[in-house]
Length: 406
Ligand code: ADP
Ligand code: ASP
Ligand code: MG
Figure 1 (cartoon, rainbow, N blue to C red):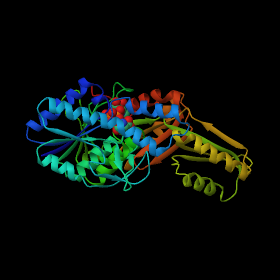
Figure 2: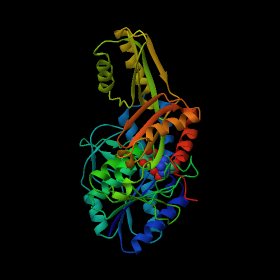
Figure 3: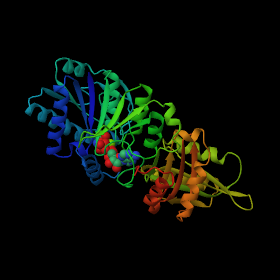
Figure 4: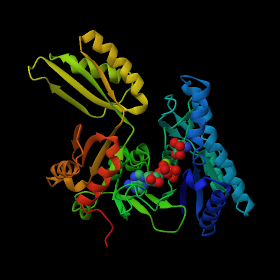
């Protein structure tokens, strides 16, 4: 039995927590498993490092950021290996490079291209626990890269695929995947299982319990995945292939994302080619657009085009849109950052109608105005004022009957 266990920031947040992780790993080793452990930086550490960089540089260089950020996970890996050795378990820590995690050159959001993992295989064969610093890799030119926020999940899933592990266990600070963020909705219910598709939607729509890319990877390579608490021995949530029983569930979760900004190009002449021009410039700068809405003025001569992009790209988006506004003869650019995207997700929507209308009615009944809407086969998302985030998530959770069985 080969296990990959990943421990997130809170789970390695103090020396006491690291000792608890070592005890859990020791239990698996003593039961006869080979164990590769992936660790995150101690909680708050990655944010602290980002703040340090922001104090010393206006626009910190991304290559330097990656070397800086990779240090957080190295500290946890070495401390975890030391804690294991202290209780008589032979263990060795490895950086991303020593684990053979080769990525592309996209600093701060690199993609894994291949994993050689030679040293990990050898350590595991010798009966050692391999403790791997998550969130990082190395380019062919040997520059350190990181895998995007939450990227230790991806390290774990990708290593589980490369090592052909029997199971990848993601240990975190909640007992699994819930019908909504349990820290916002106390009535949220833990799911025993969820399909890769639904998990992918939940993750990409803001549920940070698993990083989106890690779910994509797990789905593509059929990595058996479970999310559990590092604080107790509850069974957690299994991420599985869709089955017939699941088809009956109309909505399986409600989620939110506060990290978006809404940009509006005001009063652009209504003629062919404007949207094409705007969005090819935006995409050309590497910005990922999520929702788009166009409103034509009453006289039909001009239009307002609104779209959302990640909040962190707001400044870049505004620069591009302002420049285009000048060139296209638009009236101006409006930016709104205090927005939030609230979504309901469920595979049952494929075969049932009425989810969107119920969502709109529920929001309206609570006086929440909808600024933008987008739908796909298995989700409906609405952009609302960020001050209504919690209210919207809670009331939708209730309206779709997702709370704990009494
Ligand atoms: P880690 O540091 O272990 O990677 P994260 O903070 O990245 O942990 O992810 C766990 C958090 O995800 C939880 O504390 C919870 O607030 C949040 N979360 C958001 N949506 C959900 C959901 N649907 N189910 C469970 N947790 C969720
Ligand atoms: N430490 C990184 C972050 O905070 C990676 C992770 O925790 O998965 O984003
Ligand atoms: Mg995480």
